Length: 248
Image 1: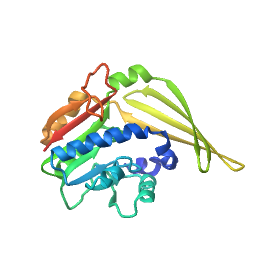
Image 2: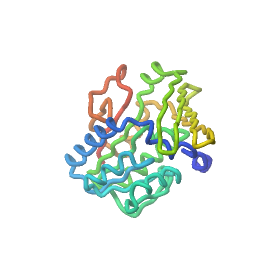
Image 3: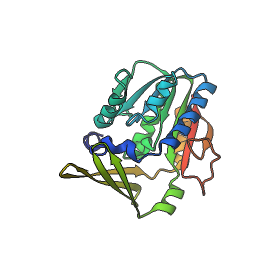
Image 4: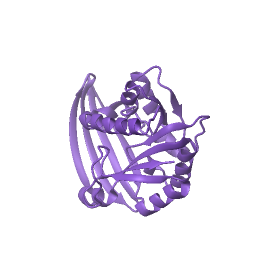
């Protein structure tokens, strides 16, 4: 994991929020908030919180939520948005926090950036350990069956205007062995300088059956599998996401 730590979101952290659909994020935050209220969640931990896209708005909704991430670059972006929110720079597979939470969220495919299923199982057990009795886990993952079929070797382009200058992105997605690779190529112009960067994500192409078996062996009861973070019905041939709602 140390190799991952050195490079994770090294270059793109500053620009990450530009390429997400904030209206969709808001709808997803509302979905999470409804689940939190349904299960009477007061304390929560956002594992793999990134730049705080979910963490910050959930905090604004008065949930006592903390963030955890391995990337110092991402945590710096969270800190720009909030000086007071509690953050943990830790590895999700072996972190130790001396408290238990009513809810843990692990979103945006975070679990499967881990290099192999052995570490994923270890992480699931660790998340279970940090939940209070009756606590919930919201786990958001890709449905690779659909994603790879639709997007293998797909190249996409985006342009954004920022206060520091224009930013152009190229995204490339492809399957390589048991990994789903996403590469980000960025070019930004600041005054008379042209800056280039590249970041690469590797997702493990996981077995849903193996994942669900591991969740159950850890002690979780899988209450529901949604087809998105907005609560739509899951369809293995149509849904791009698998969003698990689990209870300890």
